[in-house]
Length: 322
Image (cartoon, rainbow, N blue to C red; front, side):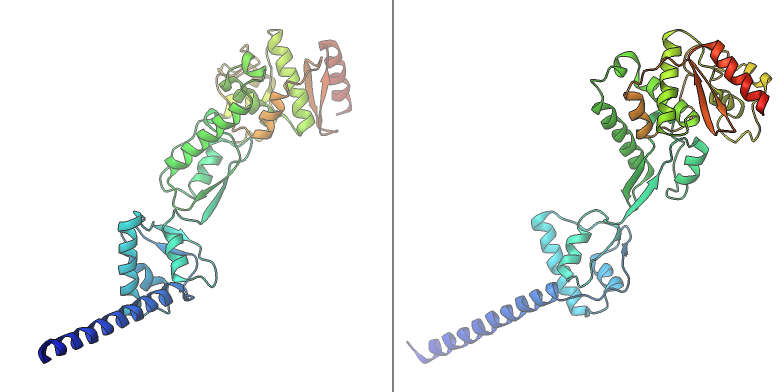
């Protein structure tokens, strides 16, 4: 072996050693960067659509140098190619003392910041529209029969149409639980939603709703008009505003498809949003002999009767005292 070849081999060893050393140092630094605790400028962080990973890091983390950001960008690009994982836009809660690696894992999934939207039982469409306007820039009025009133948690920045689909799926899941109940043999889902809305507007509490539901079942079974005041109020206001006065006798004669004093059977659609607890009461299929009831303002409760004679006597007695 001549001296030139020996010299070449020597320099190759040196270069190899330096290269391996640099790679070890680089990978060690990579490991250090990815696993060291980060200092956030704010929490939760917000990532806008179209923002690049280097912008995300620069805008949200204090303790990263330009070189750190450059190396992290390379790591994230390689990781994306291998795992087909990309960061999302939206708001993200990052735990305290998180590493850069933890942050990258969080933003590679949908937003973990949830917002709570409560749809109250008995609400009108106007009331729900007002609530939806707090969360969505674009939305449409939701028909009463399409959803069930409840509290829902959704990821922040979810659009209205995704939220609406979630509500419809939730309703289907609810009814699937009761698919073997006799009530679904006797009534359609829409009719159950209608009866539920009547209970929301008429009933005071669980026991009151149970009794009123039995009255509705009994009257429908006997082909009697329901004569429910809440339907007259809806006919007068279309559910848009409160009447702010007591019903008058002439109100009971208003010609309107929702007036159950004039029309037989159920109204054509629900008159409010219905909650699960009220629907649960309907699926209990409560039985009684009651056919009549009225509200006693002195006692702040409904008074139930089995016959019209009994109902009239109780009502006259109440009117004499008031």
